[in-house]
Length: 553
Image (tube, rainbow, N blue to C red; front, side, top):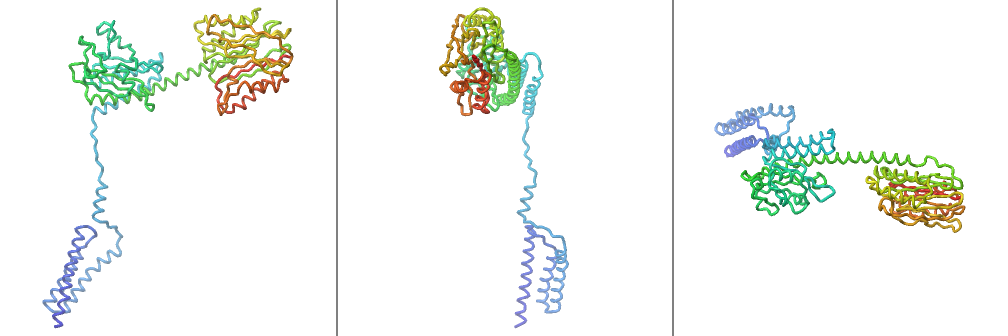
């Protein structure tokens, strides 16, 4: 009985060994771990020992076979114990790594024509840079660039003609700047224009259009590219038939924007004659791509043009300012019975204010305060002319009003003097303490009355010099007292702004004068200067500031 029961562990051991072998096989297939052939051989020895012992009962044989199977595993275990550690990953991880390690091969089909478009577009930008070195007419570089863009777009799209129109910066007009090839006009021709190819093309080459009621202006206004394969179906297109050269084929219109500002600066227009295949989406796409490069090139040259113009204006203004400063008296001459104070602060790039002191005769000292409208060389021209007239005429016996009237007629008669000036002329007779003055424009004359302790305006408002040739300027006369102060200033002084946007004001000026009326004119002018600078602080000066203080002793 005990012998029969002993067979059960033998067969169970054999069954377990078989199961282990199956599991090892699955592990090997799934690659979840490495399986050595020694494991299979050892299991086979165990199974054989169980089966042989069951058929040939011998404990010695069984024990020897089990010992042999165990010894088979010893070298394998020793190898794993003393060998180099290895990391094992699952089959899923292996598959994932393999997928990730595969190179991403996404080959985009690059068409030859696209490469050509990029190269042609880059040529626009390069040409725009080259125009910086061009000499001669300042618009030569822009014209060269527009003609190159137009010719390239015509060639690439296989158009029969093309034009580039630019929007006028100051008027609501769009003007043809580049024209090439055959371009049947998509607008109504003037009634008096003969329908002849040369006359029509010449008319279009120099044409201007409003930003409405025509396809060019509407594309510029809307900022939307248009592909018009059948013009007869578009009510924005006008056909001037019946002549064959006026018959319409198809059109492309693309707005040209200033990159970064989204402002339309022009329109690219392309045409194909009837009888040829109309423009399609492919040509429309090509034209828009080239237009994008053209926009970058135009931005480059327009920015350079603006910079160049600004540099020229700055240089001109600097020259005018230097000459303006040279007109100011370097040192005031000693004047009997008077104490003079002055203050002049000039704004960078502005040429407008000037004062002058002219000891004309024994009975006349002339004081001039002038504020010319505008800036730059034109303002300097008017200033120089008026100053020269005064220096010549104040030596005569003519009154202040007559001198202003003569100067006004002279400026109005000069065709190049397109600026006007506000002027105050004060004639003082030191022997009689008599003041005679006349003003035109916005330069006032104030009087501090020492007897009353008040500051009052003594001038009257009249038209500036250079507006109307027939203007007559009036004389104002009074006798000054000792201690009286005659004050003349330009509007840049009282209208100076502080950080809060407040003006310095006439009241502030009057308060300084009344509070310091006993001081010499030079000291009063310096106090006004200090007070104005303290009021303005770090704010930028927007206009020239000029002050003349005449203290009667």
